[in-house]
Length: 440
Image (cartoon, one colour):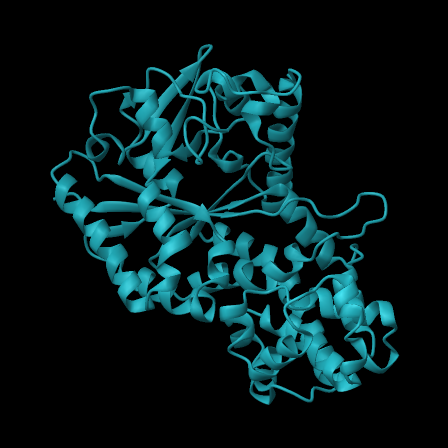
C-alpha cells in the first residue's frame, strides 16, 4: 500500500499595520504573534527531526518582524508598557485599561488569577468614557501588573522554554516590579529577533519549505479585474469597475524578490491571499518563476465539473494552464483544515489528535492502492487557531507530529511534486477563494 503524504501548509500573515511615514504600528499583532505562534511553530519542529512542513510567510508580515528586530517601529502598545507605572498619565491609564486585555479570555486571561482579577476590576465595557470613570480604582501596582501580564500572556510555550525566567514570572503572578517588566520586554525583543533566522535555518537544513503570498496580501482576482466576482454570482452588485493587473504582477514580483533577499533563494510556491484564484493569475505566477500554488477543494470541484467524486479527485496535484502558461496546483482538504482551525480547540488535545489521525488513516485506507502516494494538503492560518487552544496548542501539535509515522508521512509540497509531478490537467481554473467558489 502507498503511504499517505500529509502536507501541512501553515499560513503566517498580518496586514501591514505600520504607517510608512511615521513608522507607527496601528496594532501590535506582528510583534505579539512573533513571541507566540511564529516562534512556537518553528521552534517546536526542531524537536521532530522527521517531520516536514511548509510555512507560507507573507512579505508584509516579514517586513514588520524585520523592522521590530531593528527597532525601527514605533509601537504605542510597547511604549505605554515601558513607562514606569508610577509615571503613567491619565491617557496612558485609559489606554492600558482599554487595550491591555486584548487576548483570548478563556485561554490567555482566565487561567491567571491576577490577570482575571484585573479584568473583573475593569469590567466588561472598554469604551473610553466607561474606562475613564474607573482609572482611580487602580493602584500603581495594578497598572504595573497589567503592563506585565499583557506582554507575558503573549509569550508562547517555546519562548518560555528558551527563557526560563519567564516561567518564574508566571509563577509569581502578581506584585511585579519594574525589573520584572523589563525582563519580559527584553525577552520579547530577543524572541522577535530570532524568528526570521530560525525559519531561515530550518529551511537551509531542508526541514521546512518556505513559500510566499502577494506582498501586501491583496485579493488577486479582484485586483486583476473586479468583474471576476460575477463569474459565479451573475447578479452580484459591484462598485465601479476596477482593473489593475499590473499591480497584481508587482505584488507577486516584489514578494518573490523580497523572499529571495531574506532567505537566500526564491520561493517555489505561493499561497494566494484567502486562497483566491482565477485563470488570469496563472501567467503572472509563472512569469515570476513560481512552480506551484494552492487553493480550496471547492475550487477543484467546480473546475472539474460534475461526475467526479471528492475522494478520487482531491488527494493529488494537478496542472492548470492559461494563455499557454502552466503551473502545478494543489487543493486543501477543507474538512481537516477547518477542524484544526475551528473545532479541535474545544476538545481534549489527545482526542483531537487521535481524531485527526483517524481521518488521515481513513483517507490512506481508501486510496492506498493508488500508483503514487496520495497527497492530503492541510492548509490553514498558522497563527490564529492557537489562541483558542489550551497551552497555545503545544500538546495538540506534539501529539499530531508524533502520530504521523508509518503509512502517514509528512512532506513539503515541493518535495512531493519533485517526486510525484502532477499527472492530470484541469480543464479550467474556477474563480473563487477558500470562502467558496461563489465568493472572492
